[in-house]
Each structure stands twice: as structure tokens, then as C-alpha cells.
Amino acid sequence: MNNNIKNLVIVGGGTAGWMTAAKLAHHFAGTELSITLVESSSVGTVGVGEATIPSIREFYLSLGIKNVDIMRATNATCKLGIKFQDWHSVGESFFHPFGLHGQAAKGVAFHHYWRKLHNFGEVPDIESYSLPIAMAKTGRFALPPQKPSSQLSVYDWALHFDANLFAKFLRQFSEEKGVSRLDRNISQVKVREQDGFIDHLVFDNGEKLAGDFFIDCSGFKGLLIEDALKTGFIDWSDYLPMDSAIVSASEALETPPPYTKATALKAGWQWQIPLQNRTGNGFVYCSDFISDDDASKTLLENIQGKVFGSAQKLNFTTGRRKKSWHKNCVAIGLSAGFIEPLESTSIAVIVTALDNLTKLFPTKSFDQACIDHYNQRAITEFELIRDFIILHYKATARTDSPLWNYCKNMEIPDTLAERLELFRSRGVVLNQHWQTFHEPSWIAILNGYKIYADNYDPVVDSIDINVLRQSFKNMQQDIQDLSSSTISHQAFIERYCGVK
Image (cartoon, rainbow, N blue to C red; front, side, top):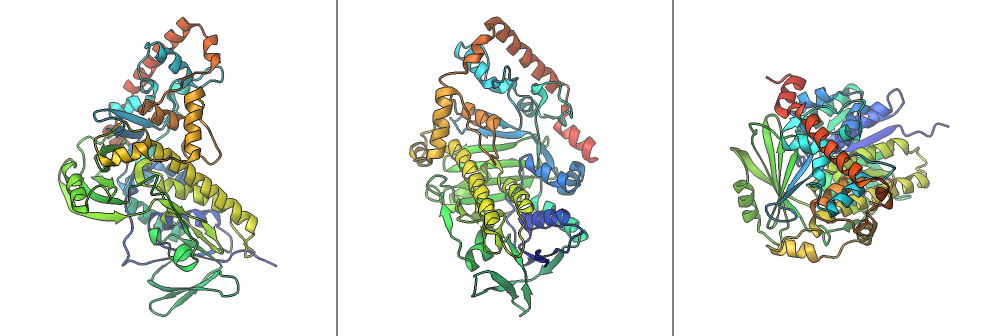
């Protein structure tokens, strides 16, 4: 007996909905799976996720879509990382690059060797040994080499893009692969009495749509996973108190930098995301420390260039559903959880969820082992990202406002405390499965906040100190030479995308 899922219903469009439709339509091409996406043209989408991390490229490349096609379709620019301004102290900045720092040796990470010479005051900041940082600081860009000559030239990149245009592109891709779209308003979600599974949707015109399996991409509301199935939500506001954002667009920067800029302000932080045709701006804040009116003024005062249209207000609660998959429903995107936009993780979480779902896609039996495994992976990913973001707030040295005083003194999860203790005592960066941010990312943030290891790996002492000194000089020179050999970010966009 064929027990395969035949009718899949996706509720919600936007980035999450159309990424889900595109991935599953591509993956299950040639099978009997029928996919219907329901969205309402009268309901707006949340468009704060215009900055991404490299996993977005893995996503669309896996669908056979080229970088240049996405860049042209979405007015995209390139992203080598994030510049954090005024987070540790006012007047200071640091970078989180999508790449390595320096060259490892004898199985020991570069930061251990750097720590030894840094103790002697003999070397500059570890950022001086990062190629993507060198390019970012000088406004340059180049595609990473397919066959790097050394670890110094190993890096990755992501995009800044118009999320609405990205969803539009994926809608066309999905519909060409057979996905059906219904423009409807959902009035009811009917649940079966015998097992609590979702049976069908009822639209406001009286039509019904049944399905075997439902995917909730309805955003913060969680129309299926929460309103219908009462799955429950875990609130992380005590750790991550930001609960609001004001967003606005402005004219394009004359020379768009190849990085996202995040500037810490007294009651929150502001992003600047350069696109080819405009600049995305947003002020993320905690409403306990600033009014909405003052937040709006703060945003506008810190925008470069002419502002387009009116600002949009967003409210959110940081946290996750207790279960991303419950009964015959999986929540993907904001309906599954939200960890503020600081490190551009919202779209990355969608990518991971879809990778996991394709591997664990159910039959009509809905095997509990698959559901439990999916949920555990989702929980692990959310908590690891949560801890990484908390570090950005907890480690501040700022004392100039109530918000930063709160962050300095707040409790942190035991998992983050363990990570920090291991690093401080031995320079070890704890690595776990399904970790979105790996050792180089943690090193970048820890270094930016001047959190250094008390000890380095003893293998470091097996290399003669003079040899080590010369190696560091050579690496720094190589980084400068590699960066200087690249072209400007603007020139790259014009050549690569055919922009005139």
C-alpha cells in the first residue's frame, strides 16, 4: 500500500513560504506529491531579512540557480561579513567575517599562535590576518578561489538583497515546477477530533482545502502551529530584550560597502544594508528603554541620504515554539521562532529547516522518531544561535545607558557560560552538531569584545619564536597583497551583474 504524502499545503508566502515551495518542488520533482501554497495578497510580509549569511547561496545553488541570476533579480550586493560599530565601547568597531583568521599549523588553530605573540605585544589585532576583513575595509570584492593556495584565501560570501524580489523569483521558479498558488484568506483551520491533526482549511469564501501534511509559513502569528495546534512558545526576552524594530528605505549609497553595518545606540542598534538601488535601514530596540516616537526619530537621524516612503513598525518576541513539528504540521520561518536580526539568521534557519525536512519527510504514518529528531535538531540550532547573539550584548563594556547596564548584568544560559569558561581557560571553542556559527565566527566576536584566552595550546611553543614572528609578517603581507589584487565592490557588481 502506498503510504506517501500526496497533498502538501503551505500556508503563507513571503520568503519562508516560497523558499519552502521551491525546495520541496525541486526535491520531489517527478513524484506524486502535489504542493499548494496559500497566501493572501491582502496580508503584507515582513521584509527585515535583507541581509543573509553564506548558507543562502548553498540553498539556491542546490536548486540549480546561479548567483548572478539572484543578484540581477533582487538588486543584490555582496556581503563579506558584518561591521559592528560601538558595541564593545563607543568609538570602537570590529568585524565578523565569513572566513578564517590566519593559517593553522600542526593541527592547532591560528588564534592560539596569535595569542602567544599578542601576549608579547608583537602583533596587531587578529583582524589583520583576515582576507575578507581586508577587502571589506577597502571596499573590495572578489569571488573566492575554487582551489585556494592556502588557508589565507579561504573565505565565503553572502548577499544583501530585496527579500520581496527574492520571494517573487522563487514563486516563478516554484510555479514552473508545478506548485499551485491560491490567493485566499483563511477563516478557519479544522482539526480532527480523533487525533488532533489538521484536516482542512476553510477560506472566507466558504471553500475548503484538505491536505495530508501542512507547513506553517504564516509568520509570527503561527496560524497553524500555535492558533490551531496550541504548540506553545518559549520566551527568551530575559536574555534578548529587543522587542521592536522601525524599518525604512533610503537612497542607494554611492559606493556600497561589501558588508552589513550594525551600529549600537543607547537603546538598541541600527542596521545599514546596501542594495544596488537603495539602502535598507532599521532600528532594533527594547520598548522598555525608548518610546516608539523616539525610536523613529533615532532611525531617521542616523540614515544617510534621502529617505523613501514612511517607516514601518514591527513587534516581535524572541524565542521559539516548543515544537517546530507537531502532529501533521511543521512551522518554518518566523512561525517556528525568531532570534532578532543582528546576525542575519532568519533566512539561515529556514535553509536548515528545509534541509532537515527533505531528509525526514514523513509518510502518512508520521513516524514519531522522525518528528522527534527534527524537533531536537531545530531546538539545538535555535539555542546555539541564541547563545551567539546573547554574547554580543552581555560582553559590552558600555555603561552609558540603562539598556547596556541591563545587558552587562543579566543572567546568561549555562550553555553560553560553559563556552566562555572553556575559551578563557584554554582557548577552546566548543563545536557542536548543527552549529550555524563555527569557531572562526566565535573568535571574531570574542576578539571584538576583547575576551582573550588565559592560555594557548602548548604545541605553539614547539615552533621557534623567530620562525613564528616571520610567519606572521609574511601572512600579514600576503593578506595585503591578496586584497590589493581585487577590484572595488562596485566594479565587481557592474561587471558580474551587467549593471551600467
